[in-house]
Image (cartoon, rainbow, N blue to C red; front, top):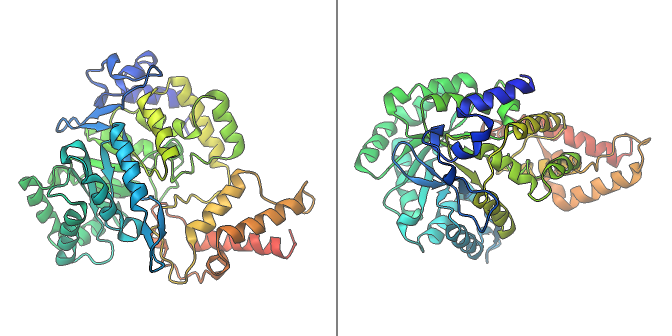
Length: 456
């Protein structure tokens, strides 16, 4: 790990400005033609920060809406359905406050996200928002199935063109996997023709994988001329992404910046983990900035990098949406001291024994009915709040033991808990974070059994 002086130097070198100029350049891609008037600070009602896409002039809100985590409810038949009324309310409020980028996929929310987004957004003028979706042909990638998915997305999103279209979650398997999903079936030729016809305005990809895999896929820019790239970036993954199967966000950003490619950020909060940090970390952040949320630090980090076009947030309720609007309508880029502070904070977080689960649910459904994200999220919450019993000699051991077991049963029904994992491994290829899911489930199950048998 580089020292803190290097952290500061590298940050300032990449944005190409001194500390006093960070605020001015942060709203201009590439840090060029910086204008202090473009920055919104804590004055008045504020307006949403817009970033200009250097490739086509699109004015995109720095806060984007990730449509993967909308609220679900039980339908008349007992199955989970999207709460459309809630979605409409959130989208209306987001649009009214300047959020104009909406990212979805055919596989989000059990296949319901695109339909829900289409209903909500089609109630507004088509030129008032940018629509992004993906070719999520993970399982069946034949030409016929892939083309059907493409046209189904248009139908469900109630549009005849996509502003931003992505090859979904490429990286695992590198060039060979890309060839199988998009080239052997003729889909790259098909999408290039769609781009030429204007039905795809910007073609890019979202990436999860190792450094050499990223290098291989980025090199395809010479052949396919990517319009943008979506990466996972946050102040923890900047230096602490779990290699070798994942890549440091610092490297991803730097390589894309060299090519002057617009960058869309996914997981700026790591699936909410950077909004639900351990209590002592939260206290550290609040002491530094008592008037703003813990989550705002993560958004300010990614927003302070000028090549970032938009940062996606899966805002599930009005409180979260309003907090994020407050961050981006009164945007304050980080200072060099803030960067030092966050790098030290990331080092502290990395030492916590939590599971790096982002609750993306790509591992679901489990063939044996486990609630994999539910098990991990409950465990992480107990670790972050210090409610972990470690030994009988521990102060409040009995209380902590009882609270963990009771809360576990409340959070995850017994038939879906970690002890039902058969280690079949079906979940492993789908996890963007490269978590050894069976191993982590066994670890948590062993801990729970130790509590139940009172043998810590």
